[in-house]
Length: 263
Ligand SMILES: Nc1ncnc2c1ncn2[C@@H]1O[C@H](COP(=O)(O)OP(=O)(O)OP(=O)(O)O)[C@@H](O)[C@H]1O
Ligand SMILES: [Mg+2]
Image 1: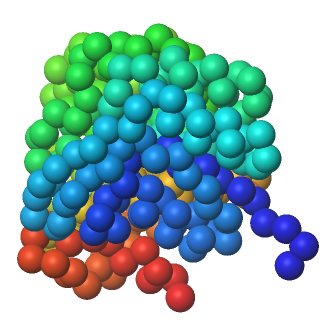
Image 2: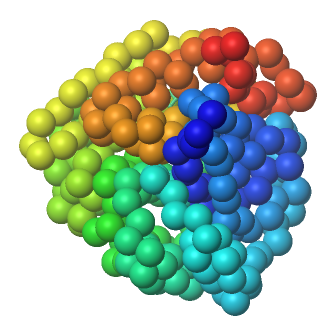
């Protein structure tokens, strides 16, 4: 092998390996993309609960970025949980300094259980410094409601929310439907006023720990490999669906996906 595309994940660490940095790097590898990381926080968690959180100080967040990027510049990168107030502005500086391309922004504001993962102050910093630099933003329904300030009830609301979110700078929006109701699940991809709807049957499973992270990591890997955005989204959604379908129920709570079901 002469070389491989490189992707970067800037996110939190998940001890149980189903979400965050650990999931992202597993997914990158599944797409034959070399994974690198900048850790934005440490969690002590299992499939049932998050027991603790350790912050990363500003100087060390910057040191990780500078040390990595001065040597290796990724072809695509994603952000997950970057919950500290200083992080969006700091990261924006490095994105510009190293002219980073193909930015997948997973806003990570509300978890599947409804927990708030980011303060309003930090979210606003992200909106100010990072949204305008992003190529795709991937909110779930509650996150899209917070960002767009629209209560989502109908398909028209979803389209309107995508438009409002795109006005904040992202080139495209993938509004994820995991939190929707009913047996059919819909993800909406918005780009330049056009909507593409991806529908599939809801899988009846508890093993959805890290679906959002794994999906955005797959999009990042596919962008790093040179795919167009829409095609990357389509293939990443297929991957996420397969990984949920083939999950094996690790742990006693919300189990992780099967990231290596392709093999
Ligand atoms: N039960 C399910 N069956 C099939 N697909 C699902 C299911 N749950 C989520 N998905 C898919 O997984 C992807 C992630 O969507 P979701 O809305 O769950 O994101 P999220 O809330 O950000 O996830 P996370 O809580 O991991 O951050 C979407 O493509 C969604 O359609
Ligand atoms: Mg999420």
